[in-house]
Length: 494
Image (tube, rainbow, N blue to C red; front, top):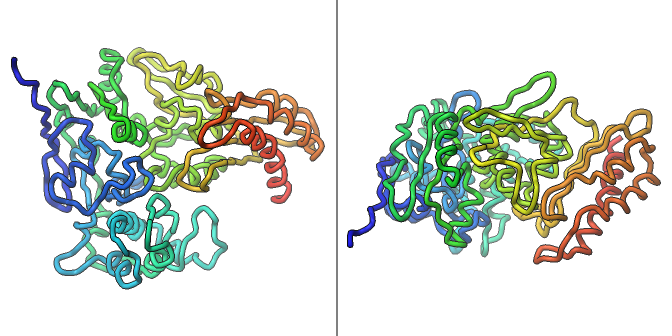
């Protein structure tokens, strides 16, 4: 009996300026690969992307054609996804005999005790250290602090560490270290790297990540959307991955494996933001961090949502299309996008079609997306509602899964509600619109009496259930109070 085909790859990645071949089956994550080549600073703490002990820095393209050092969870990222990329680990920050400024500040200010989480903290801190906007944020540090983007006197956004957890030292000395950092010195080679373009799919031999056929499966990275759609048409069972923040958990915790994986995160056709007179179109493969940065508050409801989505480490990898593609009833983006009347562009080898997001979900993790179709873009119709809010009810404000999520987009003219859209998550088998509540609000005066009446209707929307995150009664209570909270927020802002 012949032995099964050996799973090997000729994919290559630059790690701390040294080129390594990526070997092994396609489900091997970047953390295991790095530790396999002797770079053991990054650790596995949770294997779910919640603790940040595995954080590394990856050179990612910035909107202006330069490079942005981006921290990601290496425990979730397939190693094959790093083909042609440049990575820095905590070991690579050392310059000869000199430690990096981030490492120095963490040491002198007592930011490390047992040290298990420290390399991950250092990589997230270093990515923020090199963030190009930090100098501008430092000059504006005297302005009122934004609760979702609080920057220290040196412009350091402390929320860049939201995905890094410490179990023993406590966060004050870590924060002190972050706020003590200056700006990169002239001659800093890592800072200088940001002024050049980052590796892209166009500069990578796309076939190097196609592993041999065998028991462990296959990983492919097409160079064009057309090529990806042809593969999907021929193999509808292929697993489509982008940031892999959801799939990585399945691999690590549940031992999931895929016979064939199709990576679409670098496809140019699925990236970018397009603005027309009728809508704003978001590329499905744009990460949430990229959307936050590039939209710059131009869609206020998304501006309120994104800082509450998981952690910075997750948002640096997770894509907006991927969050919708899972069909999860507790995803954070659907409630906000439902409130925005969003549409999805579904594309296959035979063409594209546009569907309302409100008609997209058909059952628990089921959608109208057919075999051979990808979510290629999300369209937000214009004009945007002037009154919006995103409420996430969870056990923690950040880095947690919603028990209930509600998106509001309301237009009031001359004291009358002319349009109301309310998106709900976590209260049914699918995300849904609160249509009965919307109908009750539209045409009614925008008053507290109207809101109290509509809140009772909202409490009856959905079919909430008991689980380990919240009881059905609690979810119902949160729905009832959320509309009153939205009203209070809007009135306070007048």
